[in-house]
Length: 168
Image 1 (cartoon, one colour):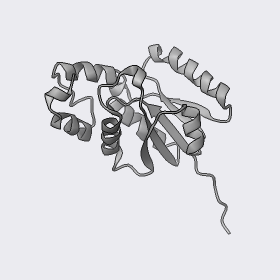
Image 2: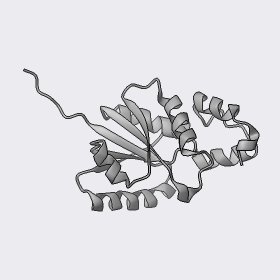
Image 3: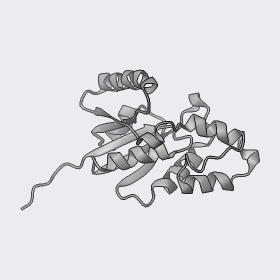
Image 4: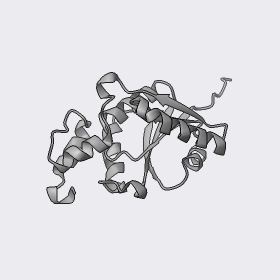
């Protein structure tokens, strides 16, 4: 009889408005550490996203569909509650620069205060992706700027197929 190991599930929550090469890089790195990565796309009405939840989920699913052990879900509950729902023992957060650190540290402490059995792991994207943020991409999209080097090809294709009247 073999020993049954607990599956290590990581939850990577975010707005993903849209999902970028930086996000994709974090997902790949997390897959090297965990058995399964759940990319959790937040509704995030407070952030007034450019893309609908449905569009962000679709873009993220397309970006990761060839990766094994990754699934994409939408959510509008506390991240800790979502982690419980999927038996995730770890929350993944990305750090690009020192400016991200203070916010992410506070968020990590908050989540720890809600459930100290769920760890937060901070991952950095490769240096070539460290400057990429969804807000930079959204700003470029507003002015029809070049984004091919910032977005996974399936995401770029989806955004390119949207008419300019759907982008603010």
